[in-house]
Length: 346
Length: 269
Image 1 (cartoon, helix red, strand yellow):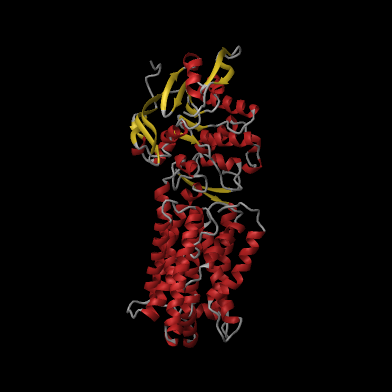
Image 2 (tube, rainbow over the protein chains, first blue to last red):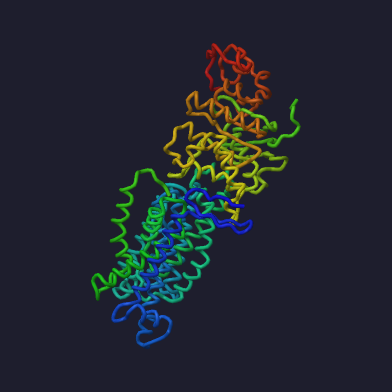
């Protein structure tokens, strides 16, 4: 039987199964994917290496020096950027929707600062055998737990959550500065990348963990978008439509924190991605629904571009990706917020 | 006493509290099937709290709400949503949503992860659009519509949920007279089609005019219950609202009409 699809949507039917998708969101997703592939390839090339040579080297063919350049030097860095950007984009989209506030991104509610403080502590203050990455992950989780506990009763909703998160973030920020001020110059230097966010020589294990987390987390996030879309209504409407609010909130928050933690364990505090990428995805997709996959793609693309800019702008001096992100991100964010009518919520 | 033996929705010793303060204590109520029940009473009498309990928006502090004889709290949320639709007073939608999109959300309890749109969904949504007379406005954004149209769209979403039970919290508040009547007539129409409707209504005369069954509450207790023409008396009105009045029979509908109301004492006791 032929069922017409609703206006603006595509419909796929297979027996009793049916899938509905928003046409514009899908188109934007495919375009972001294409742009990401192009950016990826572009970042592999350069220094006398054409696209075809880069692909050959990537596949383990051709000149051994080129293989080393592509597979050992460029690829790990690109993967670290791509994966951390994707994770932060998706995590930001989830948390913004959960808190119904565009400012409620993992970085804003203290996760980034928690990760930084723990990572810096492992380098300068507390002699420990644990890698900074592992501690960054712990720090992000601690900050999330603190914020959630202290804001309890507000149900991860609205301003209280954000204000408490800002406070927790400030606390960890102060802690980081205190440790850096007291540390000797070599240790402070070693800790520096963790305070600004960098993709230079990231620990491979953390990148693999992040890849695993994304492989599980992105499909899970995509499954959550259906209840999350309904959670954009007032609570009573969502309950009336059969959404289990409590369970959905906990699942969303946990997923968002896990993705953020794994990402900052790789790249450090580059949390502005989590603010900009979902915004870009919503803007391109026509403010539709909860564009968690498009936000991930936009985040990956954005991080690659920011890292490329950081490497080329003042070459041979390298600007850490977190700083580039802040420089290009802040004006973009202001522009997006100012050009929209007030009162919009994700 | 109750003409209908089957009560799709009832409460057993229901207690509801606001924080530590008890609002409703030990309420037993059976809501008759296939009828429009109006819950009336003065501000703060617990009528909205009762509806929140019935719609499982708020956990009871004691007792239970039974849906088709089973404790509503023990049923899966989605299953409840297939039997009971709710239009809350604070209903708000995300920006940019069109009428048709809003109404399609009503199908959510009937859909699954991989059953996202069926011929049945389309049929029910079209029927809901027609029932609420919104066919022409289907692709209009919700925020561009008038209060009355928007309220009809919300009711259409509840219709699309295709449940035997419909709960409405003050469905006509903030609507002008014309839109009030429009909404009440739509509700009557739904009851005639077999739905059981429970609504909290502020205005006693409208409740008498459009409901089959009246539940009059004060201080968390039910003062009177039954057909409006039978239970609404001058004494009841005085007990509920602290006003003295004369009751006439509406010459058109035959339902009680309140005239000459005057206050006899401070209405908050």
